[in-house]
Image 1 (cartoon, one colour):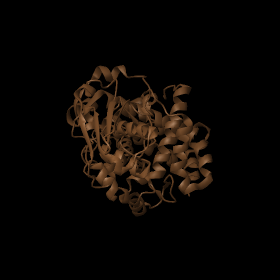
Image 2 (tube, one colour):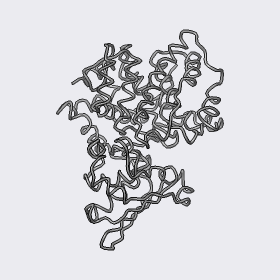
Image 3 (cartoon, one colour):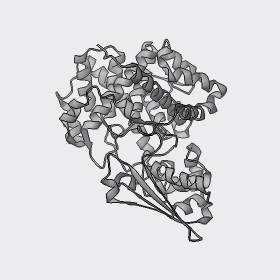
Image 4 (cartoon, rainbow, N blue to C red):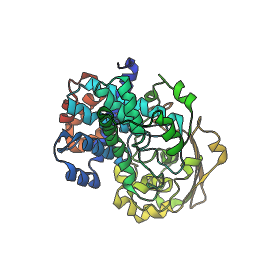
Length: 426
């Protein structure tokens, strides 16, 4: 039996769904995503934003890959990762394959989000592991089980199977230029479908294995009290949403430089140095010579530099050409990032970033920000998210983007999820 989901939760989840679909469409325009999609587009369910179709498990994989490729998907601080793409990618494939309604798609996305987020919240991930592709497989399996109408016993068995189907992820892959990091969410989405298939076939997981895997294997700690207390919390209401095509932990520095530039613009030649002080996890994003676009998206020095040079931090600001731009690279080399332990101590309540801009004429300008726009306590207005959707979708669909926004934003009004996917075919 499906839980009763309050109307305000469903409404916010519709916003998350629309934002996630926009990120997927944008990701499908990337060359490597197009190439792997062409290889595996053997027919089946439609792939959002493309003319291709693939069998449901592969459709879930390709959708998860596309949804993280442009670093535009939502995230959740209490969960420590990005629950939406892990739940939405398999839910889209399963809902289309089974002829489910848009309302069922939204319900499954919510339940998958919550299942994954609860595990992410209760576990302490090993420092070397990236959260994508780990506990997200739990959310993927929960979303699929919901769409198949499975009872609590079968769903529990599927989640126990899913616990053993997470990936060995590396937190440093993206920092060093490894776009394999974008594969993690796709792998978890695909394995979520597999977990339910296996449970239905009689394959069993480790009884009570979720705390074991996520507390001892992938993670190094499990808080059972936190897990139990999170029942009914609705983590999806605590999501953060991004307007920039880069890692969330770069965006404190990005906001600080944008505020300074709004007061008085500067050119790259005017900048003598930029110093960033922040909390520990953000301070790790300190690479000044990123090796590839994904590394640029996870570099505070390059994010700040490309914002000054290109005037934005949108998708094109992290293209291969932008990463190689000598002016941006020279400016990034003048940006230093360090941890301030006092700022680390202010987490999780506050995520603080201080930026000092030193100009060649001796002028020194400073700005401190707490959190970033799009955080749960600083939400973007819906109009800003609609504009983000337009920027992601309009290049492939023209003026139809407005119609697609309404369908994605209000999936409860869509009779069949397959209609939503069909509408997103160019």
